[in-house]
Image (cartoon, rainbow, N blue to C red; front, side, top):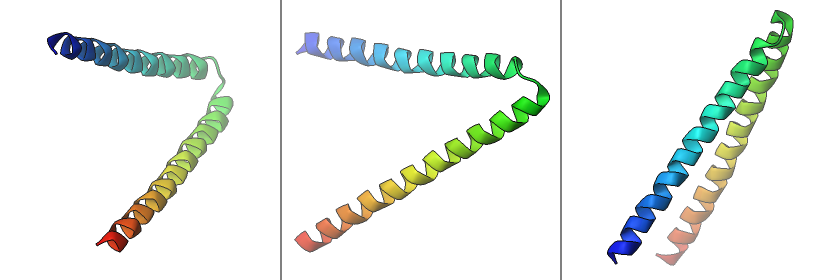
Length: 79
C-alpha cells in the first residue's frame, strides 16, 4: 500500500510539473512571437487571439451549463 501511495505522488508530481512546464513554454513562445512582430501586426493578432480565447470560454461555459442542467434534471427525477 505504501508503494502505491509513493507511486501516485511521483506520477502526480511529474504530471503537475509537465503542465507547468508546458504552460511556461507556451507563454514564452507567445512572448517571443509577439516580440518579432510590428506594432500593427501585434494589434491584429492580439485582437484575434483575444476573440478566440473568449469564444472558447463562452462555448465551455454553455457546455458546462448544459451538463449541469441535465445532471440536475436527472437528479430531480430520481427524488
